[in-house]
Length: 77
Image 1 (cartoon, rainbow, N blue to C red):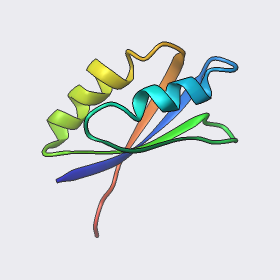
Image 2: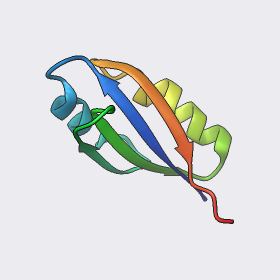
Image 3: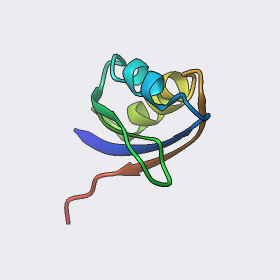
Image 4: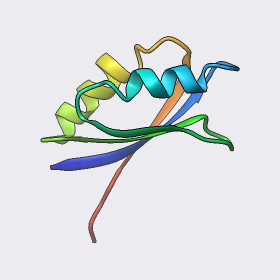
């Protein structure tokens, strides 16, 4: 199981809608709108890194109002 945080920047005024929409995507554990340099922080999981990448590109980045994403896989050292 691979987990990651996805940090998202949105268009002005879109953070709440983006978080709500992403929260319904399969594999998303949590999606919250926040303050700071990013507007939404998502925790997601998938079976493989490739599957996680496909989720980000094919589903998350397609949500209307997103301007940029940064995916940070969780590591266990």
